[in-house]
Length: 208
Image 1 (cartoon, rainbow, N blue to C red):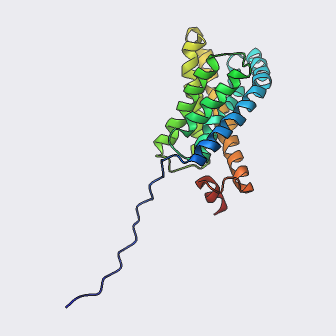
Image 2: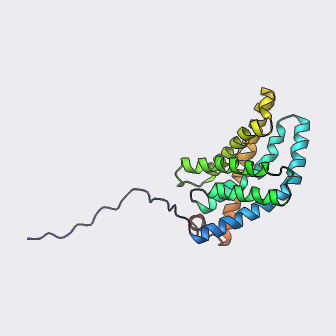
Image 3: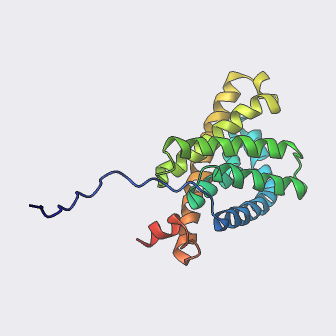
């Protein structure tokens, strides 16, 4: 005597994120990197003027202007949602900025690597599963902390006073959270609303 098969209970385990890059991922990440690099070129003048003005007011407050230079990693992670996307977009953006005449020359690329890794680490810590506003802001903070650590050695900040370093780190964290994290999240939502991200999870989740 045979018994009728019983329906298996639906699995409650979360679906694994797809980590393999598609051609469309590479193309869109490249476009994001170039577009962000052009933004960096503009910010090299506007942002640096703000940086120097704030630093003249109180040394260390210049860090409030840095967040825009950190936004590539946040955008890459939020939109592509694949391992390496944050680093790829930030590094490509920094390379574009350098090639178009950044006043920091090759140091721009070093910064792109550090900042991209800082953002990438945050997405890694959430296993590339969460992409809400808190994660976006934390990715901006991760990029800011990585920039701070690099500049201890690259810019000689290690020799500066503890007061300066504390103010500068705090300013970087605030700027990373707001100008990179919050602005990056808002830009991602705005792009998703247009439909251009419909081939990405970032676009489909916004549609839902």
